[in-house]
Length: 176
Image (cartoon, rainbow, N blue to C red; front, top):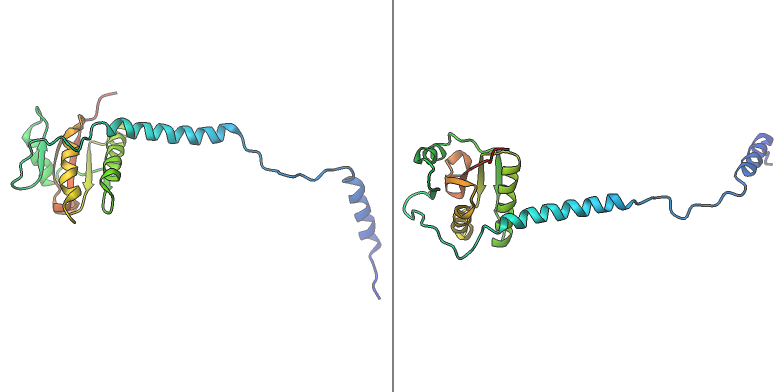
């Protein structure tokens, strides 16, 4: 014996009368063009920024760096005292780049992006961790950094920032 509740039947008939003539949605998500374009535009802008800064890095250019002792460089006109401050760890890096496991092209692209980000965010000291490994990035990173016009100086990092496997970079921040 099944007893049906008369109230349920009334409610069902009322509901069916209320939704009579309503069509079912086939797709209820609206995708606007602006949202898609803004994501694409941001990707284009960030890739253009990286490409603009990647221009400075040539694999054929070799600056005169001291091969004896720790890796160091100071642009013409930069005091040797600034390099000494880097060596002693007086400048504390605000941005870090870890290049472990990257290919040369990836490392070059990431280094360019990091320098662009440092300039954009007014970060004057950064740490580039190239690692030791097969000495490929350890040899290339200083050559790339010496080519960038906004790099004032760099020095092998003190032990607390990576020692032989890292460089502290002093960046010239243009006034806005």
